Length: 96
Image 1 (cartoon, rainbow, N blue to C red):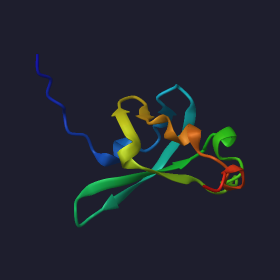
Image 2: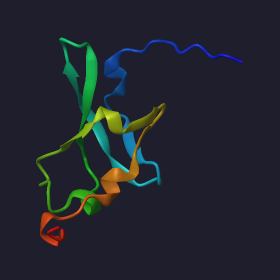
Image 3: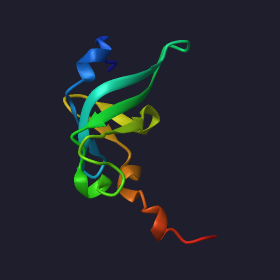
Image 4: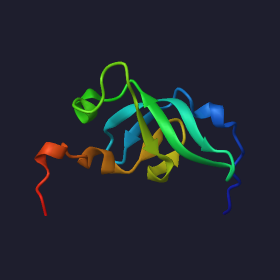
């Protein structure tokens, strides 16, 4: 059975919570980054981010931009790849 998707305004994403595939809260969408020439969404600007994920990288007054290619599903919440959970502190990375 085919389901037709109903177009929604891009602004309807603002205020939605973002979670990883594993159910970890990432942040809340505050804005959308667009490529106007290509008419594409390129990123989600998140505020109220999970301090456990971003404590070293983001101060209380900042947010993060998640590439839209990480988005897996959009509904009442937005699910993204769990790659954000695997971010490493640059000081912890081993030189290869």
